[in-house]
Image (cartoon, rainbow, N blue to C red):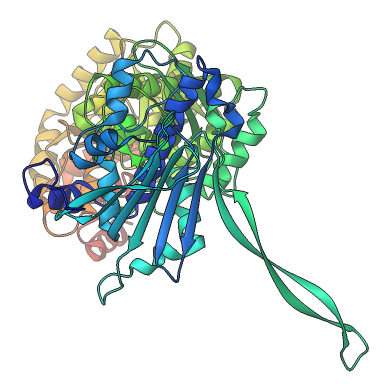
Length: 635
């Protein structure tokens, strides 16, 4: 029979289909199995109204057979089959979809999934095959037909013999080359692996012949009189797919224990997640999701190698292993799956089109994750603290990132160490404990909890009986700057100068003292001009003699952070230092006396106090030897 040409533009179009649309050649099996599933779905639909079909739902199946010697993979189904005309339409016209036509002509019920709608998936077989043969007998037809093609050169359609309704797709695998090892697709383990990866939840059984080896005793014995064993291999047909995914089952069937077991197996985690989130959404956009919040961060979580995202399925067929668009970056730690029949996919079913459905699902999942974390924070604080220890830094990065776009979403999830308790506290709980007289949310920032708790600047806040938050991570003050306030309470650093704690009387006394010490303060400012922007008297100090505060947006903690950056960039980003002196401390009295009698001594005392303030703030002293010598001289 004369070879027919494809009803498409040219060989280049088919080359494009084979070589450009699909990024992974292993996709071919997913596409062929999806087509088989569609064919069964069509006949299953007809069986609802046509008793002559003679098949019940449990009778339908897909079979995958391998023949290493012949180098063929055969995918067979007992679905609706194709007539000669349908072969011409579906296989002879590239990008013609019989599934799309069937779906548009029939009001299919919800439990009938027609996966393939673009008509190009079949041609993915040519990525691994140099010849494809399709043998099909349509339901209700007497004659079967065979379609054969070696690629863009065209195809033939001839009559053939087939006893049963359905379709066999026989792919002759290309010979191996130095660059490509096509023979891997003739290995049972590899094909089984691909079925589990891409088609595990196709809802019809996928059957394969699986070899099993047993060791049986023989009549022979060894030198110890024990009977010898020999391997016996037998082949057994087995169903290799799960069919009904756990997220499609009822909660009674898919218990939390089963979901946790699924999580551990699927995502290779040895520890239970802190939370399991189930979503069953119906409406304009229908989908199911099964999400997990891990209890620990993967070793590569904060590296470029980590692949965030949820596994995305469309009607049980895996489309993407890691779809990062379904959750915001701040929730990149969430693992799980999403399955929706409503997503708009491109023709290769490998790339998700960014459309309204995707945004709706992503928005809903974002809210579900936040709601679950808030529930944990209240109902199971120990589990939340486990989560926070693993991913709290990620929540903080989420607030700072994208110019604060997610700060309203995340601010209620924050937790910090507190002077009120040995446990972490949320901003909401902090504000709930604030007395009416307290204006601000106060925090002390340092590189450790011990240092933060011991800062001299804390004394005035503590004297008022107010609670302090301790910021001990580099990111914390950037978070505070991005939030600025919480429930209309400004977040203020104890090192930021005015804490709003002085009474009018205390302010007047400070101004009077500063006025009497005007010459001394001017002297100190001139003496320390290379180290500080200003020198002033402070009401923040109670028992300590000195501390370092700052003016402007760059804090002392931020300066320490930037100093750690490689190169010279970090050295140029500095806070505007302010030296604060306690006018009630005996050291200030000694400084005042020295200023009136020996200005060189007063200058030495000033430099020692400035270096002490730097050390207390966790900043380096420029010349430790000079500092040590000055201390010894003064003593």
